[in-house]
Image 1 (cartoon, one colour):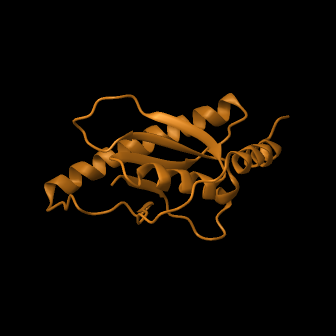
Image 2: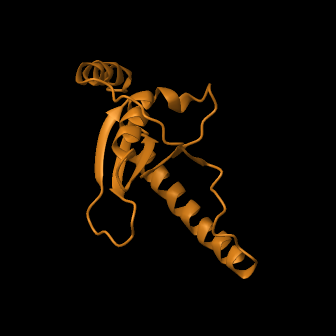
Image 3: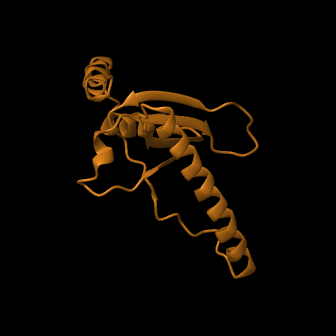
Length: 140
């Protein structure tokens, strides 16, 4: 049985309306293959696909929203933010290693979904969702 990781969102979070991608990769560190990125999908479709793909396999599925950036400045700002968060995370991790850090602790920003059988969306559902997603993207 695989694992699904996704953001834990409030019911009214604006990220629900963003396009979502799924990154499939090996669950076992001993496997060495390049992750596969699929999408964009609407969030319910992405979660259903991830559930279906991880149901009977040793796959990790990371389901996350795409954050469309329409300018170089926005992209730079996102990269700087990610670098700062990573640096901050390294500092926090070092602090935690100095104390009694619990490797089993979960990240509050993510939730692991319980595995239940979910029928994947049909091809026509996904194509209709592509049209809805593209109509929401800022194109000009």
